[in-house]
Length: 370
Ligand SMILES: [Zn+2]
Ligand SMILES: [Zn+2]
Image 1 (cartoon, rainbow, N blue to C red):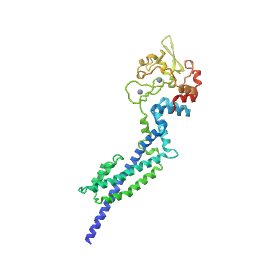
Image 2: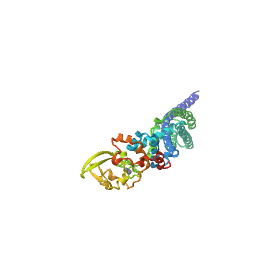
Image 3: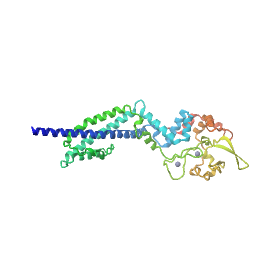
Image 4: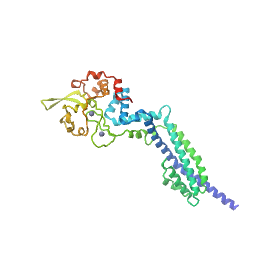
């Protein structure tokens, strides 16, 4: 009877040990798994959008064209001013909005993507349990079975999720001898963990991400955001802090940044006018029309770099061709622009009749096929 009692005690102790071990381990796995699912899904969303949504299939220049088309469809002056004055912010907001509709549209893509990340990671955990059990079974020589099991388990999962081995020190000396029993004891709590997460995903929204998918996607379209000091066109360099001067392919009429004409009296006295400048800056830099630099000094356009920074930080190629888009925009939002800057399209800033003939359709088709 004594023998029986002893045996019973040991097997009971063994079972408690395994239970303690499994509970502790699953408590550590749960938050790590949850985090890993969201991290993986954020990347999947960004990658999926780059593959499927035309806006994100090319360079930032392509995205810019898509944004210009979107702005023309909306015909909202407020949106235009944000785009013209805070391009980087506008791009980020645009990307965020697109990500949101991609994730939360009627087919609830977010839930599907979270589920598939969960499935992938869950399978990884199950196979890590199997593999580490197998390895421990093959090492009859080792006394510290649990420590070895945990080493292997964490190693197997390194790529899939962040479960530091050091967090599991509390259970590495547990007296678990029956490793096969441990393996089967893991199955149920792990499945419960998966089912709980699945339930949570049914109501998931964008706030559940610690690293937002739109942040990941926006990084892909980063680069230099310097704006031309004349017209506000954004530098097209793909490096944020690049060497050399800023450059843009297309410049714009300077009225978009509120540039106005001055009248010069007797060669030096300046009289402000409230007439906007409709000239494109890349044609102004080929002329000797003067402009005022930040210090109030008059500099001829064809020596614009002598105006110092930020003018000298730009390389503006002389080019008189203006995108039809901006001709359409200036005519469409003429009153809004005049009100916004409290200036007028008059005198030298009179809008040419030819601009008024540009239709939105022409403006858009000139932008490109996307
Ligand atoms: Zn410019
Ligand atoms: Zn630049």
